[in-house]
Amino acid sequence: MKSNERILAIDLARGVSVLMVIMVHTLWIYGDIPTQADTWLGEVVHFIGKGTPMFLIAMGVSFTLSRNQSIVLSIKRALYILAAGYIMNFLKFVVPVLIGTVPDAFIEAYGWTTPVILDNMIYMLLTGDILQLAGVSLLFMGIINKFSKNKYVPLVIAFIIAVVTKEVHGFRLGIGGIDYILDLIWGAEWNVYFAVFPWFSFILIGMFFGMWYKEKNKSDAHIFKRMGIAGIFLMIIGGGLCFSNFEYHFGDYFHLGPGGTIYLAGFNLILMWLANLLVSKVKENRVFDFFFYCSKRVTTIYIIQWVVICWGMGALGYQQFGIIGVLILIPFYVILTLGIQKMMLDKLPLLKNNKTNITKKSISLQKP
Image 1 (cartoon, rainbow, N blue to C red):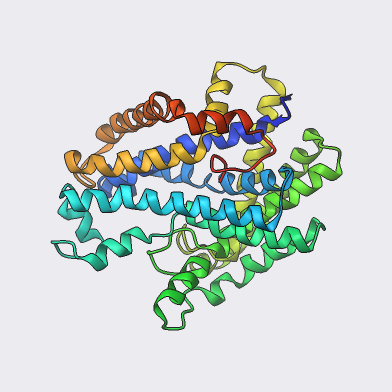
Image 2 (image 1 turned 90 degrees about the horizontal axis):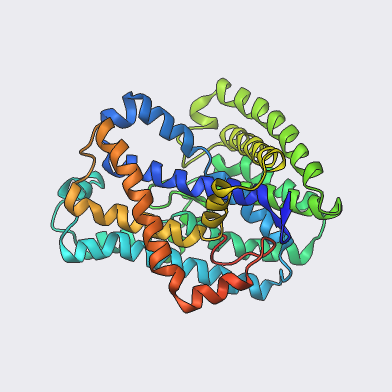
């Protein structure tokens, strides 16, 4: 099912996943440790969080379908998204510190003591989030696309990254600024949550399927069926590797090994197949329209939700709520985030003009 040349399955998956992110972040910031670790809600939300790679697969597909894929434009987009990522960090971390609303418990979770010093604020400002990953990845995507149009090139690179990640995780040279760049590429600490190794693998897999999609005359049925088949295959391989040595192959969610990367790639490809099944069998409706709306505003919604969730700690505290409290806060932050998007950002002239020029086959700030 298509509308105005949009791949509706990608839209649906991305729209659903950005709302799931709000659920995950609300639990992390407001749910107490027992609620996160020992309850059905914690289990459900952490399972939902495993859908994050859908953002990245969609990014790879969108890049290959954009009309202009030059290195110059990739660099411009990369700088644009990186700027958005660091502005987000400033708003969600540094501003609350400067005005004195950050709970002591949040600062202590970093292993720091109050008052917060300049080095602490710089650390928070430079935190590697998914927008930093998207920005750095765009630089590499432009280079790959420049030198090869073969769809198997990004696929091979994806699996090389997945395999070697654990071997290079945390490698540094002991030189300040260079070490930070290396952390963005393959960091093993908590200053970077989404390092290029291994998370770029998901984007590259998206590029592979995007190139294949174009080769097959843009047939949704063909490409999403292959996504489903590949997803099952990858889940079996990745799951087997994780079962053999969970600590090495999965470790923790943010510092995946080869088995975990392969497993999550498969899991999210199956989710993509399911999204296409839905849009193929069910007529467009208001629920779909709502998710499509969210999909077109992925980046701004992502920034808004992180900022308001972090600012809310000034009034609600850090990790203070049980199941009932988190269940109340999740819809509150979903409504607040979308309300700000709708009532404020949608009315900005720059964003309104941009939206008229965005198609599904383009990649912009709204599609990291």
